[in-house]
Length: 275
Image 1 (cartoon, rainbow, N blue to C red):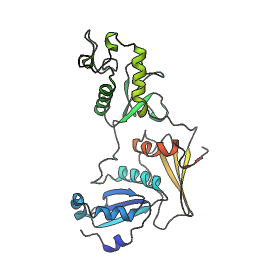
Image 2: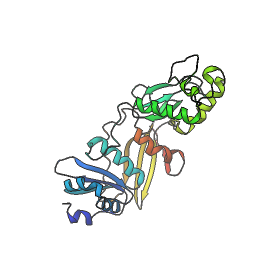
Image 3: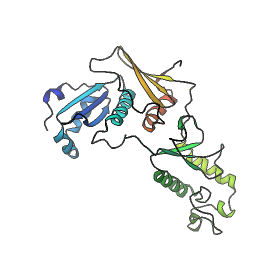
Image 4: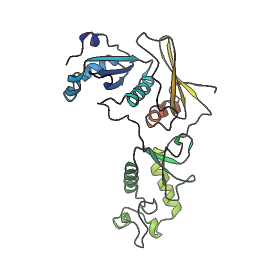
């Protein structure tokens, strides 16, 4: 390991994003933590990260006022710079969801893509998937776990003998008339309730506020997209987040996952912003 000792000594015990740099201009790895110092030092103790550490020449960081800001900044930087050792937050070109028409999914769902449908303002979406294959696997697993019918879900062609699950005792028989369509639709709705995609609930943009002493960061969010962060005060080793090259260009799965809970459960300070 050739990380300068002064880099490690200067690490702040505060929220933010840290970057491991090698010989090239782009970073090797980008991470986030509520305690940058503790998290970076933990990397040094991980045998599985020896290869990355051998390539690391320096460590830099960007402070944020809180955890949400760190998560949003990490997501933006990874997508913009595509570090070699980051695997999970790259942009998805095939983001899709299952869409049911009506309040109860009485007909087979349709697989819709974020490039065609604005997920932020569309009702009846269930699950967010990075590929059609993952979406179909999820629906099959859900059907098996809840005794749902693969024919009714549009995953198998109809036959006189019913779906394959019926023959294995994994379907209650809506495909052969043993269960009513209404009953099956209700069970589908119950099985999928936990993965319903939340429609953007506000009339316009909102600001999600984080504070660290006299430093205030307001994350401007619209339709589950993080547009920018406004700073008042601030630490010397902080700076505004980089512009997101994909901002406004579609539904951002990672931003949605970061923002949905704090915005909906009321656990953070929130202000409504005028357009």
